[in-house]
Image (cartoon, rainbow, N blue to C red; front, side):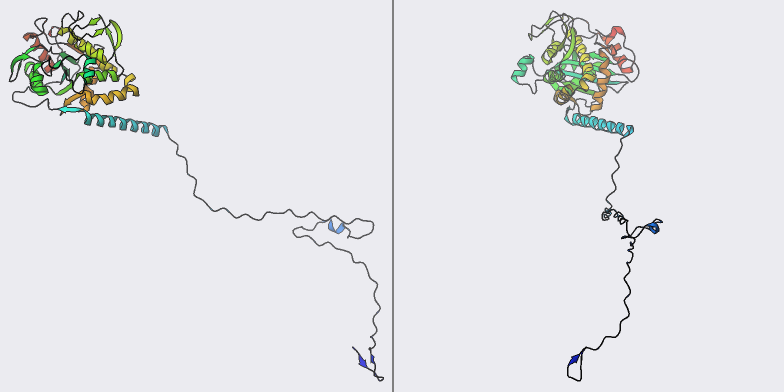
Length: 399
């Protein structure tokens, strides 16, 4: 600030007297406490920085760097608990699979097997009695066979045979009690009364009126009511044998049929479809001196071996045998329209004992080796025993 004097010059006003300056004193440096570090009892004993003869105290260590806080993860779905399969669940699953498998097979056979009205009611039909009776027929049907198949199987000329006939006629009786089941052969050349056709060979009934007339004829001459009917032809028989890889048989004597030219060597062997068909049909051979009586005996022997092999675990558990057998059965077999698969299973179970002497096998008693006429007295004893489920007299059957 200036002001003008008397002489017109600008002058600076005089400063007021200032107090004497105090001599400067060194101010001791004090350490400020670091954030997060508490005071220590040793702080009072530590000299300030800048003191003579002493080095400045080292700075305290820096606090550790902390990572920024992480965001909490969003809660996800609860982890699934693994199911533990107990023994009971595994067992029930296996049982269910087995039931479904068996049910599928049953349904397949039930709706695939051919049916025929063989057991019709008629006036004078025998009444139902004890046990269950099956009429089992092996026909010489060539249905489904090509000319090559007929030549390979040596089926013969169908025209020479005089129409479709039955090479095999059997009655399988399954009792209701603990007596043995019975497999009885009826010789094909047996002279009997055929309803509406007079007296003729029993196998002619099949060619004259089919399964229904044959069943009626058998019921009339035996007095037994037939409950079930099963028929198999030439081709179906051979296909079943080939499906299971052949049938094991022990042949006592070498067999040569002069009519079909089929040869079967002696000894234990596996017969294929062609050889098996020749074995059950053979009667023109030195190994079958009783002709038809030896043939029906061989038929029963073969059926026992066939049923035992089909029912064996080696066949049922082997897919290479079981599934070909399953596929060939519907084309091979014909049953009555009232029959079902469970009826057929019951027959197979009952006939398994043929090979182990659990089934009585034989032929209806005849008067001579031609097997054309039955012994009336012994035949009556035989059929009465079957009708009443009583043991069959040993003399009432021919082996």
